[in-house]
Image (cartoon, rainbow, N blue to C red; front, side):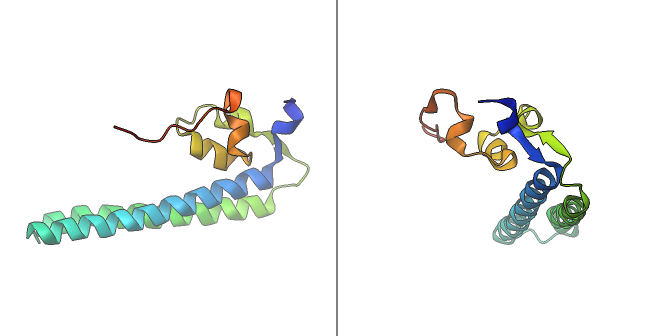
Length: 121
């Protein structure tokens, strides 16, 4: 695969990053609901615990904000400005995240096209 195959416009790269951040914000919302449910089941409605649960809400709100910011940058980025996304995703430890951010098919990311390993016992 040539280096040219790894090139994406800066706008496209920033656009997929904005989508990823939005997905993370939705996971933060889910985490907040889980924490609130656990606190309710534990019968602990202390102000300290509720304040700690609000950290997940703050995380989600900040991720939504950064997602909007990056999406705006994506719209403003010159289309002729290119970035090598493969270099950019090399430091990511989650293969699925690297796949989403690179804009490549997941099978292209795995040398030899082996099976995907899921969490197993």
